[in-house]
Length: 298
Image (cartoon, rainbow, N blue to C red):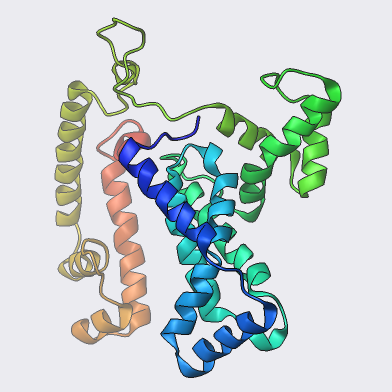
């Protein structure tokens, strides 16, 4: 459903459209002359005259996208941004009419705006998705017209394959976009039915751990910490130093740093660390019946 502006906005949009249509069309030579004045001499008057002459192109393009449910005025504003970008990059020496060049920039600016605002869920993040978003309805209408199916009927497998071939995309992407376009955004605060006191969010499962699981987890963590402290106490002072500096700090010391501190080679530090870890493992396993009890649940 198209967005409906309030009366004041409608009057402002109509005024802009009428002003755009009153702007005189430019001849090829005049158009190139204005473009060169702006490009080579930064003549802002030439730029404004060039841009105003093609605001009618912005209005015409915006009317093609009015059924995406977004304000016409916003589409026109985005199109004007694209028109200004085209004017700043236009090279008259290439002998291409400005209208042809600007049409791409205007359409691209509007399409980007639609993709950003059509839904709160990001749509059209790839080139294939963007092509599907803006062409699926048109191609589907062709299929409905040829087969005389109702517009609400789902696409057949053959129809999806034909659209995928026309747009050079995967059939799975056609299916995903068809599903995406068939639904609409809905707030979780919306009642499940008219007159109901229950919202959709009331039926969402809480994935957080229960209070009982939290208490059990805290108790288990304390127990494991106690076991680790007892196991560390069974190591030699040098082994405890290595484990604390290498394993129990956020940024562990390097083998070379510990070697200098302890007066041994880094290879010797590595050997001591390996031996200390084996001792810790054996000490911890003595305290449990199942080795899985040493692991914290994710």
